[in-house]
Length: 489
Image 1 (tube, rainbow, N blue to C red):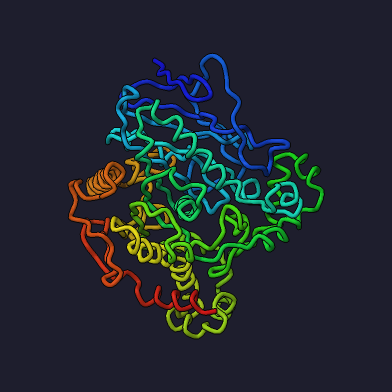
Image 2: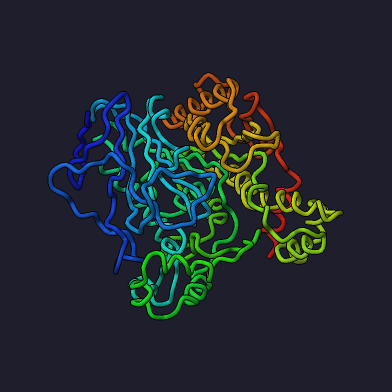
């Protein structure tokens, strides 16, 4: 049985049921041919009823094994949106939760099977996932692109895609029973980092009313436009020829721009760019000054944010590990080594993982909480501590996603999941808390312990683990060191 909804571009037909599901809805024109590396353009309206029962394509990328996608394939024609709604009419005005996927800005999918929105929607919200351009398609800056832009800037196409999707939501979500005045953005990793940039971006203000930032990659310097241009210019200066290349051919040139080992404290390519137009300052500066969307905020991280990223890094000896630290901390190398020691060759990997976790995720998490509480009393911090599926290691980066969506059995044919009733209870608690926050701007009211707003002096958080309980002071001395490092001219 089909469900029909009228959108601004035409009617669509989705799956009917307790939760109505609409997939692969175009929110912008396909960014192909001459539209490659241009801001998203208006979609072409259609006549009749368009089928919206299958996911759209993912942007071309190297897929991440921990983020399995249900998309039919990969294509530059990827700007689509998906909606799960329990509403039976457009009069219900339910809160809306919009998920922005992670993947280091070079991968990810709105069709990630961990992020199927049905279970979360059953809690009384309209759930939306979306696609945006990633990698060389979404964040390439180039002198010729600057010249043709009319604004003297290029790159950030992936962020512009996200803004276009949020504008589509404002125009259309009421038809799905959603409330366009109660839109909460949530995401993980690069998705969460995207939300941080949208909070600091005037063009996105008013398009959302609350945020949940899971492991936000934030508060490190962004790449300036001139440096991003110089990296893009490595591809050549003939823009017409670059646009004429197939998607596979242009994607294959990504390795000319992206280093094998990314810097821990410096900016990097193919992610949001300090272009002076869309993004006018580093997010850390914008947050500290209050030049942001001052919306209710949840922000948090996982116990082990680094191990899964550094397994292939060249730090197999003490000397190589020291070189990595010197490259990132310069004059503060000795202080960094005292905090993150590696006395033996076999210690280098764990020390690198701790450095990665703190520089890429934990530092930004605390910094966002500290900055936001100065401007928004509804600011809350969490720490996810539930141990991993197959080992007794602390939870890896992104492990909380399946809990938040209630999809602990997302891909049983590929990975048998030894979850137990404690996992399912935690998932229910997180889902209820996230939904309560989306509905009211306050996570309290669900069947969980009281979650006190963040206090910078106490550095408090709510722990989601074997128990849900209050905690404080997560990795304080390490993050204090990083604060001093990033404050040093």
